[in-house]
Structures are given as C-alpha cells and as structure tokens.
Amino acid sequence: MPVCQVTIVPLGTETPSVSSYVADCLRVLATYEDLAYQLTPMATVIEGDLDRILEAVKEMHEVPFRMGAQRVSTTLVIDDRRDKPLTIEGKLTAVRDKLAADG
Image (cartoon, rainbow, N blue to C red):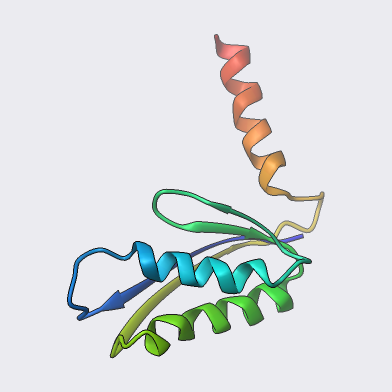
C-alpha cells in the first residue's frame, strides 16, 4: 500500500500564512474515508490505494484556486513498496525500533 507525502502551496496570496489553505485541504481529504492521513508541520502523509490518493490530491490541489489563489505549487512524493506491506505507522515503528536498539 503506498504512503505518499503531499505539500500544497498557494502562491501570490495576500498573506504569508497558509494555515487556512491547509485546513480546507484537510477538510477535502477527510471526505476520503478509505484513506489514512497524518498532518505534519510541513506536509501531509497519506496512506491508501494509489488511485484514491491521486484523486484526493487532485481535489486538494484545486482548493487554493477556489479560495482565490492564482497559482498553486503541489509536490507529491510516492513511496510504493511491493515486497511487504507499507503503512505510516510501520515506517515510524521501524525507525523507533532502531533508535531504541541504539539507546
């Protein structure tokens, strides 16, 4: 199952703050009940079927335009591992386990 990271940035807005854009993008993402996601300070991580993720990201990309932005930059990173299951929590656990082993 793919784990993706998406960052959507409106450009040329009246304020440097993007939190309202992020909130509205997350409202869209929350309607995709079959996708798991985690907000981070710099991006949103999404887990699920790749076609559904791409559908959600496309819809999220449109949010800043609907809010008045004239330009939007969206970055999507896809981690699609096929040899074993991949999840957000699994990736975090793998790193935490290594840290604990070193500690």
